Image (cartoon, rainbow, N blue to C red; front, side, top):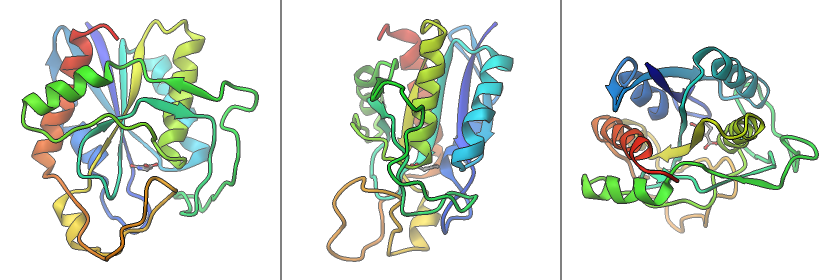
Length: 221
Ligand code: PCA
């Protein structure tokens, strides 16, 4: 049976959990449209995340890869349209690394498009009652790093497998514990007032990722 690889990240910054990993691990072993889902954890570090992902690609040989990460401050499930060739963050990764204006792949293309059907995914999510929109920036922290590295690997293999990245909101429990959100990078305007960041229950995020996999397997990009 062909496989779908889903990855989630370790908690980072002030958080003790990461919804991306809690959600993808719930889908491990599920089958959908003739594909078996394999869920794996990635470290939230610039140095280790991509080597780990490359090993997974070699071992799992997936037909579809969807990397998932947490985006504090976002209210919707957001398939990412594009990965850019830069690491730049004020928030240190889990190894304490804070790169500035660093290329992910020196000499690599400025950007890669996702090869997921991002608009079809958003339509399918909204039909299922999940707030969703296409995002045009995965930031410049570890998520974009992994997204770019993933698309680079898939391109090297002639894009035989499809892949991309989806950001998910915080869980209600995370939102309840912070009113002032640390921002890993310049993802959007700072909110004027301190307020509780938006969140989605884990069950909704799990369902959203299943819908995302289904929509990706269904439509050509
Ligand atoms: N979110 C971070 C990295 C790990 C994660 O879950 C990001 O958006 O870059």
